[in-house]
Length: 287
Ligand SMILES: NC(=O)c1ccc[n+]([C@@H]2O[C@H](COP(=O)([O-])OP(=O)(O)OC[C@H]3O[C@@H](n4cnc5c(N)ncnc54)[C@H](OP(=O)(O)O)[C@@H]3O)[C@@H](O)[C@H]2O)c1
Image 1 (cartoon, rainbow, N blue to C red):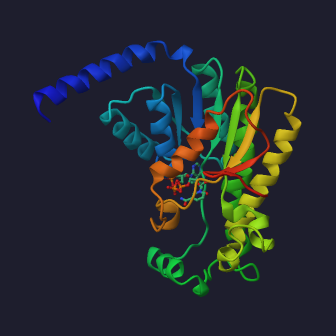
Image 2: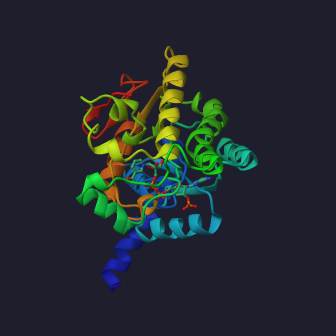
């Protein structure tokens, strides 16, 4: 790095330091699974847009490495918080840490997710080329119950437990938002309605554990949004698109930056924005 670049990085860091001092005035966001993939990209976009982000990471070392990456970009308005969404004690400790650190939580992004057994990058690319091949992992008639439970523990029960632990802090915000990161694979319409946009393509993408866990998350979102209907809460499901991340062995066709933008948009919706809905980058989707 030349001297000029070093100085401008120092100035940027210094100005961020002073901005950090006034963090109380910033909106606060907690993202689970933010140490890589879409959670990380969403964190970057939010920090860059003046939000203070609590960066959830299941593994402390991986979280610290991510923190260093953000600092290297000159970003400082974040704090890494250890959280394993399948571990009740870890969720409680994270909620306590947030309560001590933030006067209120404005946005919760339930992003942490796992796919369950998936094809390799090569196999996925072959299916994209020739959809008739289909994905043969996670067949409903044979997939082990433990595999299904593991996926539900993160994608469904994990999101519920984190939400319930953080509702008290979210209630302190004048404009609380919950974004549940789901998938178009969790849309029962896409799997059962011949007129749905992905019906034909998804004929061969019947991932019994992953798709069912996201459909369950969608159902929970509708229930929660209904309960909170006459409050300032906005609770929505969003599907980010098929982005190249660890989840799909980097076979996704979109960039994580584009996909994270969809999460960003619904994390930052207006006070009179929608609630209890399901969106992708083009608008509302059928459940
Ligand atoms: N990529 C896509 O095309 C796509 C499409 C539709 C929906 N989504 C959804 O987008 C979300 C993010 O996925 P991604 O594509 O960014 O995948 P990713 O790169 O694999 O990131 C998943 C994140 O979740 C974390 N995680 C997994 N289990 C956890 C647990 N028990 N507790 C806390 N964190 C946990 C991972 O932590 P570790 O690093 O420790 O493993 C990682 O940070 C998921 O909900 C996924 O279903 C992705």
